[in-house]
Image (tube, rainbow, N blue to C red; front, side, top):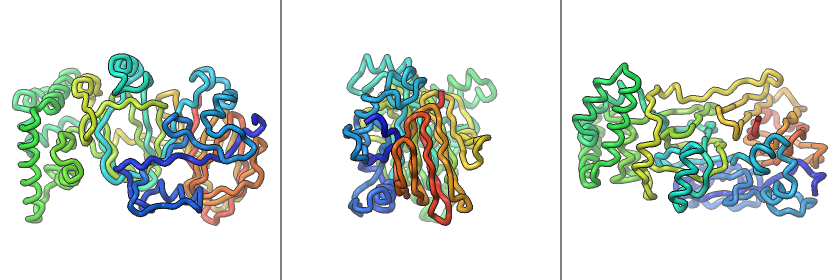
Length: 422
C-alpha cells in the first residue's frame, strides 16, 4: 500500500558469540523496549540489531495495512520512497545498514576495501568477498566504547619496540631500525611502517606463539607483583589474550591506537583503516556490504597479503580518530554526523524535557529512526495516528515525510536517524 509512507519495523537480532549477554546488552534492552513480550535469555549473546533491508537481516513491517512482509520487499515495490536522488544513485536500493552493537569480547581486527579493490577481490575470491561494494562505517558510542583504530604515532610504536622485546622480535631488527630512522619523513615512514607490520603478520606461527607466551607470562608476573604494566599495554594484552589465546592480533595493540569514545562521540572508519571494536555499546551505520579483510583476533580466514597491501599506513594520534558531530543550524536539538562518503549520514536528536511537541523534519531521502530513550506518541500524514513510541521503537520514514512527536517522558527523548544526504 503506497499511501502508508511512515511505518514501524520489527528488526532482526544477530546473536554472534562476541555480544553482551542477556539484559547486559543494549541490543536486548532495545528489543524488549520495542516488544514487551520478547523473551530475553540471560545466557544468550545479543550482539547486533539490524535496522534496514539487508538480505541477511531484512526488517519486518509492523503495519497490517501493508501487504509486503519486509522492508526490502516494500522498497522494491515502491522505490520512490527513497527519494529521487537516492533511488537514481543507488539503483533503487537503501544504501545503508543501520545497527546497534553490544560488544562483550573483541571483534576481529579488520579493514574494509575501497570500491576498486572490492570489485577486484569479489571477482577473484567470491567465497571470501561476497559483493563488489565498499564498506565505510561509523560508530557512535551509546555507553563508553573502546576500540582500536588506525596506526599510532610512530613515536609510540618505536617506544613499544624498545619496551616490549617480544614485539621487537616479531618485527625484527632491520625493519625496527628503518622505522626509527624514518621519523619526520612522511613517505619513508609509511613504507617503513608497512614493512614492520608486514613482517609481524608474516611471522611463522611457532615464533609468534612462543613470543606471545613469553610476553603474557612476563606481564602476568609483573601485574601479580603490583608493577605498572602500561609500558607493555599490559591490561589490554592480557584481556585480548584471554579471549584469543595464541592470536597474532594480540600484538597489533602495539601498532594501533586504542580509542575510548564517551557516549555521543563517534569514530569514522574509511576504506583501508585497520580497526577493531573491543567493548561497549554503539550505534553503527555502514554502506551495504559484507566485505571484510581480517588481520587477527579471529578464527576466520586471514588474507595477510591483501591486508598488508591495502592498509592506510598514515600514523595519527587517537584523538584524531574521534569524528565530530555538528549542531544543525536550523534545529538546535539535532547533531549531525556526516562522514566523507555519500552512502549515509546519522543524526542524533536530543529533545530536552522542556519540549513537549517536536517534529522530525522531512528530508529528501528515506530514513530509519530509532528511539534510544524516552516516550512519545507519533503522528504522520504518511501513516501514523497517535502511535506510541518508546525505547527500542524503530520507524521507517519515506523521503519528504515528517513525524510529529508529542513527548510524554519528563526527561525528553534521545533518537538516532540514519539517512542519505546527497
